[in-house]
Length: 148
Image (tube, rainbow, N blue to C red; front, side):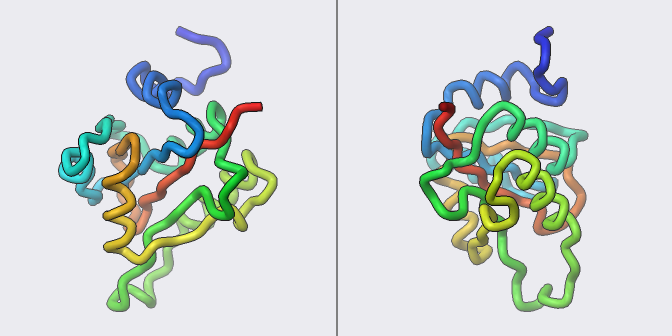
């Protein structure tokens, strides 16, 4: 056990976060996200976090790594498809509050990719973290910053 490390961060995930350098990205996928196949596409590290939601993982991850200060939006969401435009996605508001807790830019640090662009960007991430999140459109890509 370690002091001051959120217990939701498994040893495997801590290793991955430690290995990541400035500019490397981690995709946290919801329970519907095709994480295993995305990770295989370009040999990304694939880590499972079954039973855990994205908000809890996001908060824990941002406790130990900073978001990239050298890009405008280091946290990227998946845009809704036209057929889902009327759906409310309350988890996005949770993400913005969590990000604001860890990054002075708050919601301004959050951008979005069109759905299929999100998938392409996820394939280029260093790690894909598969959560057990049940909310839809709950996927997020984080770009690691410099620890100063």
